[in-house]
Length: 167
Image 1 (cartoon, helix red, strand yellow):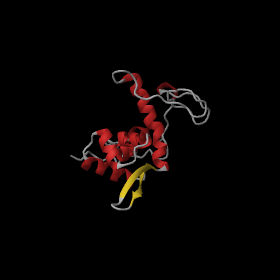
Image 2 (cartoon, helix red, strand yellow; image 1 turned 90 degrees about the vertical axis):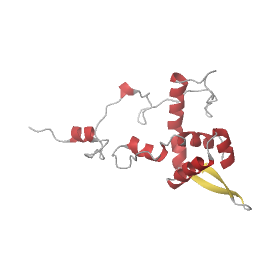
Image 3 (tube, one colour; image 1 turned 135 degrees about the vertical axis):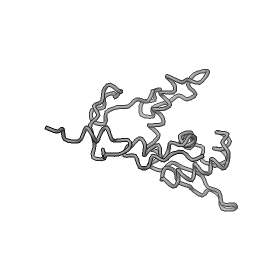
Image 4 (cartoon, one colour; image 1 turned 60 degrees about the vertical axis):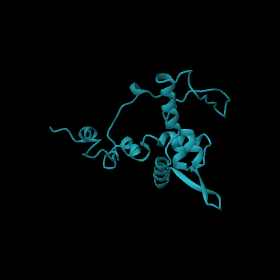
């Protein structure tokens, strides 16, 4: 069953989910980031059907999140690797993981520890302001309409906020 597309929504979250929001896609990206590149290794680790994995990998390659690299000629076999665009998704995946470690921890505790290469210390991913570096949470943000706040699904509220107030 195909899910509803968010392609017509004027919302960056909806547009992102349209590309990487299929159930298995974040887990496939996680596995590739962790070093699994071969189809069979990913399928085995996730216990995902080959047909479903093929569809997800094809979609992620089509959207420029992954690239295929040949690692064998006879028969031709390809590995999957994160593109620059795919690597930009890693911090978002790590933020989801950090939330899961706090709110939906698997039995036995978090399955992964993150070590920051620069300082060598274990860390928990957090969101920060790109301007001042300060921590960013739900209460630390003011939302204002952006240039894409068009009248339509996903941005009606922002479009109304952007519209001039009648005298």
